[in-house]
Length: 299
Ligand code: GTP
Image (cartoon, rainbow, N blue to C red):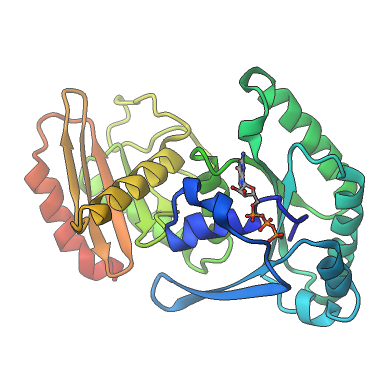
């Protein structure tokens, strides 16, 4: 949901159809609701509704189509253009959508994206974002919301969408537990599981919302970049696009640097795993063999 031109179809086409940001300017306005069924992790099907944001459509969602639009909602993602001049109108529609959810899908999670953050000058981003968060939390009243600043031109989009999709994966916690055991077996600093086509993060061996690493060696605490997950998603996705332009298929990746070794390889039919090891004694081949041995368990 969100006003016309706020960027809903652009982000959908980047995450789920692997289109580059440069092509989004060619997208036309969405007419009424575009429904997509995205196969995610094999058996899980995401039913994605991209609701065109022109006023006439919004009015219809909130009146005649109200029960259709707001019933059986798992997550509502409301996109706000950070530079909009019509914030009051946006907020009015947003509050009405929240009421629709309260009426028909009480349990739905609500994510708010303050989008096109790239249009704000770098030095002012944090303050502008904080102001928007306060404004949106106030407008949300009693409803708990998660707010993310996003842009199609950087990794922020992957952070928000990984978090959104995570709320829909039934066994995400369980997966993290198994990844922790796997990380320990590999003496890895961290293990991350990505969904195959979107490259969104499904689970990590580190505790949720923590920038600290899990390590089997308590002495080896490595400073890890808090943006590492979404940056990896973004980088690998661009790399996959480059591979497909050269008609090559992306299979796996190995990095052996002085400070660490990283292996990215298929874990299951629908996932890739990234194993990062800071111990120079551990050979890449050993990590690959561990991945191979763990496949059956994770499938
Ligand atoms: P409706 O279909 O009418 O509801 O609009 P929409 O919300 O789907 O907007 P759409 O995705 O078509 O994007 C509108 C324009 O915003 C396009 O030209 C995109 O290239 C541009 N856009 C999308 N995301 C970003 C962003 O993060 N930053 C900037 N600068 N432009 C963006």
